[in-house]
Length: 350
Ligand SMILES: Cc1cc2nc3c(=O)[nH]c(=O)nc-3n(C[C@H](O)[C@H](O)[C@H](O)COP(=O)(O)O)c2cc1C
Image (cartoon, rainbow, N blue to C red; front, top):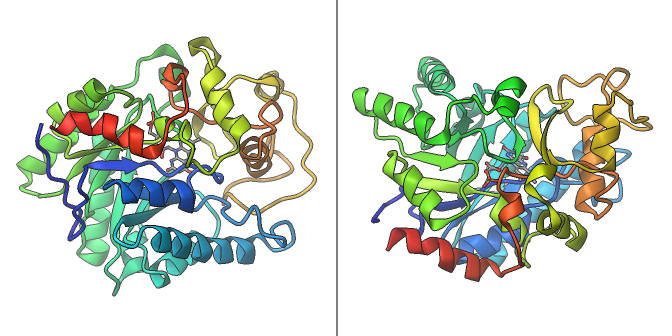
């Protein structure tokens, strides 16, 4: 299956984007490895400064510094590759992180967990490509209308994220639990048809639950020009998470993967563990410190601190933290190198 993904003037050898994974799961190691194999590597900007000494005291400065460092490192490791940044709209100081990324000459910014309405203005005057993540045609239309009206700009590509993705999800919790959400291929077809009708040449990238070569083919047949894959990249040596985090993926069974409500106000998919059981039973997890991550969070009311929960898991305290996963994580059974994984996935395009 021949597909040529073009995001503005960015032309990856393979139409595979490694999805951004926060906190600290996709940083410069994973992103540069994917970029060196011809895909697009994405650094997650979510609380990226968690390893900086002053993170607890001054999260904003720590995050900005770490973001610049990780972008530089990824570009050094993959000088000819394409490196992007994932930024969640729900994050505090979103604008400041975009500015750091633009200054560091990131190739593209992929942005979801909310509608990135102001992104065109924030990257104005730079060559940074901007790519919203949507989970419905409606959201895609809203973004395009607003971007055109305010900035005369359209997305350079659109990521359509379906209900089987990992992390935060743009669907109703009940629909995810009951499996009644629109499927990825349905949403991809709708968005592609709409763009064709409007004569808009914007590539659509499918994401969520893409595990095998045949999954990729299905999404491409629905009209996508590329895929965004995250969960599979966790079981690689180059993934930036701890070995314990990766092991939790390898050990997971289908029945361990659950839908939960995140303090971000969106449902999320995670591995059921001691932490999740406690939260789901309505037990509040004590909050000692606010890291000022999400705009809408009130530390007095939130059931747990999402920054702490994600940092705990990525650092290896996987029973005490939140382990986000895609729906097909249980299918993973061994660690591989990014090169091996890309070689396997590449078979979809020969
Ligand atoms: C551990 C983990 C963390 C994630 N963090 C983010 C994030 O910070 N921002 C975001 O937009 N998407 C995030 N995602 C979603 C991925 O970027 C990706 O779109 C999605 O997981 C694709 O589905 P797959 O994991 O089944 O391949 C995360 C996914 C996982 C598994």
